Image (cartoon, rainbow, N blue to C red; front, side):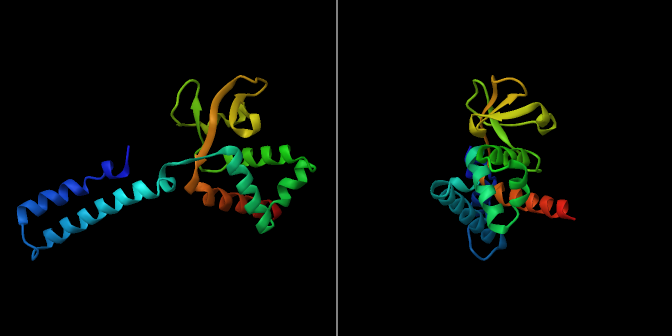
Length: 170
């Protein structure tokens, strides 16, 4: 569903414009503003779809989060536990991402749609296949595939992980 389809503003704006018909009333300016917002939503929906409706795969997200933590000097907490193993390090970052307040999504087999993963059961899952698949602990049969998070939530993930590392230092 597109964002402009969710907005009732265009229908309201058109109704007000038909009723008033002249530009001296405040209702007309509301209608014009609604039409502007409608046009803006159409343009953004066409040219910038990545911004609000795309998911970033967990392997890509965990590497990006680790890179940002390393750049800010907060990755030493994870590096100390990983003992130089790159796969273990990224796996730890993935588990830390699941531990934040940001929602994680995945596709239940054989669905094609992302669904929110219940984080209260996070201790029962582990990542396999480089972080793109979640399976029950001790099992290799996938439960969720294409594990992802929303791109625009990455800053919140980084902020929460930095705050967690800072709290662990105290």
